[in-house]
Image 1: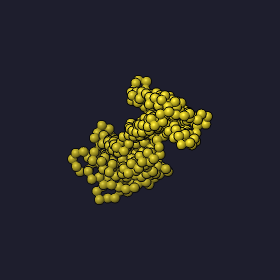
Image 2: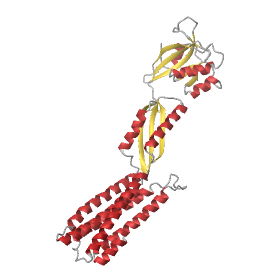
Image 3: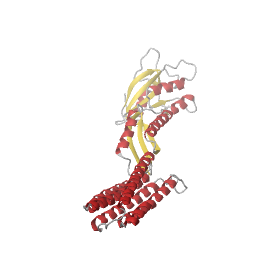
Image 4: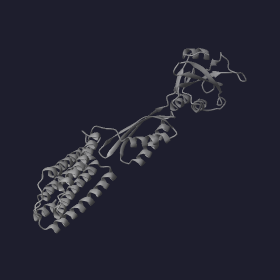
Length: 382
């Protein structure tokens, strides 16, 4: 800004003086961005999530500066007067080249840092500095054109004004999208879905969404898992979060909601009494025991029609062991992906009851004596 004003003074160029005033607006814009970055991470009682979007507000403000710069350049191209005869021409050209080089180097550096840390306001300001560079290039072309006898300043300035205006509009649109909680870009969401799909325990991604807030991203995922154990589900979610954060370190928060796979077939285990060496028949009785039952009838209930049928009979391999029969049977049912068990035994306060609860196998008691009666009660028939 100082160099532009100095060159305008020694050369008599009103354009350089006007560009110096334009650079002063850049200084104000940069100071505003600095303040935005400093306070964006602060959290208060009123703003417990932080002031991340302050940066987007600043980026929106910068877009107005850029659009105003485009208006200035366009007005000068259409209505400005031709340059008067300049003095100290070599010094002016050398000074303008120094300005162009320093502005270009700083804008590229600021853009690289802004992209690295994910700061929208730094990126916006880097593009703003670049518009200042373009306006200076316009002045240089005007001076050189006038020196060789060609007046090109109006046409070049009008073209640059269009480029600058387009840049300002893009920055404004991006800032408004974030302020209105627009979704993350589709490429990022698709890559997150691929991480979900690659995990063997993820059955389906119900929904994957997210939004930007300042330099940070917030992601919300809903999925179905092939596990009913809360401990295992928690470990899976932790691994998924680590994979996502390794890929996108600018993500501030990930919320993953998980639920078991919705099943069309619901498996129900019923402990029954069957004499050794005999096959179960239609009148098999419901056992009064759980861990000591000789056999486990596996019923299949169609969740769409409600029809219940016998899918299989499993011998109880743990009825002869001395301790933790019920716990081992509960684990046995979990291995066979049983969803519910119905028994006449009271399992409340017992190890088998706690095991079923931990394994997320539903448990209920029945007073019915035979398996056909139980099946009729739950909606089916033999």
